[in-house]
Image (cartoon, rainbow, N blue to C red; front, top):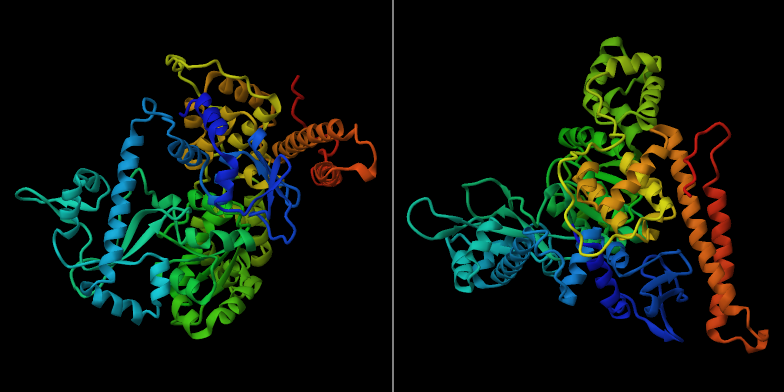
Length: 602
């Protein structure tokens, strides 16, 4: 757990203008800096950085926050990684005692960086001729190969191991799984040999692992991936997200394929919002990566053969469980995405994507094409194939809606469909975390600031029902001012779970969340209505605070002809804030009479 005072130190010491200037062209405007917003398309600059308050704000799309939230949103990083990366740049030691794995993580990064450069340079030397020939046979240009950092691991036992030995990084390379200890005798040998190397990168572009495609040899699996480590978790990583990030944010959509070269081929023809799985399973971690990238829709672009159809069934459960908007586009029989892209170009791929069917419509039609007219045996066979899908969808609105839609397609009653599909139902999220009162909380260097009650209600709602984070249309999560609450939310939504998040939290945060839990409805629609009310209250308070500031700053204005540029900007902002407030009040209307609402904190 990163101490809260350390996070505050990062925010106070970071040069916010310098940080944002790496990605946005800023110009001085009085005491502020302005430029074109990196989070939406605009011609007239409406994005402001206020260095005195360590704060940025966009008048157009309402994006706002501090240095940590900027790194989170722009680079698609988690809260924890954003804080750690900023602290590293500033030379702030965040958690040497709290997290003994930090040093190992840094060592893994350095070893992986060295390996990526070694593979890349080897590809373009004489010994990389066979790999370059294979790349050309796949229709990948040299420019694309360079862009994706492709490399070559020659058919030699210890080329990379010897380089690590010379640099004193051999132990780090072993931890990263790049070299292995010999079974007999001393020394190490290379894990990847005779393979075209595909770097797997974090969203910001740094290599964290590798996929190796066998070329010119017959022994070994066709594809071989790095083992998982503190740096690389395949369940939280999407290949190509570093290249696709800007296009995904622009389109609010992503195209999901299953192979590295499928993704590379799509990018080469101009379909730059394509990403690929690093494993066969789609996980909540992948959905979080897409959410941080602001993808509101996912299009599955899969082979048109039986394997592609089976993949839809395999991916449907996690997508439905996440409440994701998804569509399915199947390629012509025998085509891979990269083959199709080379032949048809970007226009052909875009036409295919535009014609994609909604996930459930495709699923129902493929499993039971005749619908109500199918035989009883055909319906039962289709339901049997749907059992693994339904088993992954938690109890709630999505599950009941799925059963209703299935009932309509099958011509049966919803209760009968549910009975036929009944299997192991995913457990409901815990209403509260259990605590082992025997362990004492670690001593804090500074007393904690109690969390604002309304922010605690927001975090408690998401911890109880994680899907609510996807309903946060006004990104209230970016407005949370209490670092302890932001840390708890980051831990819980990064796959560590509610109990781990609370175990890591400070005592004041635990108390605030537990108090909030008692005030909230337990689940379902009532909890959702309460969540909207909480979001509404927080947003209205933030807007009112800014309006009050603008009023004080402009109430001494002599006359319209004497307005300074800064005053004009504030008055313009006031108009936009009033419009935003109206939108918040309209879109987050209070629950209808009879619906239980959370207690108002005092």
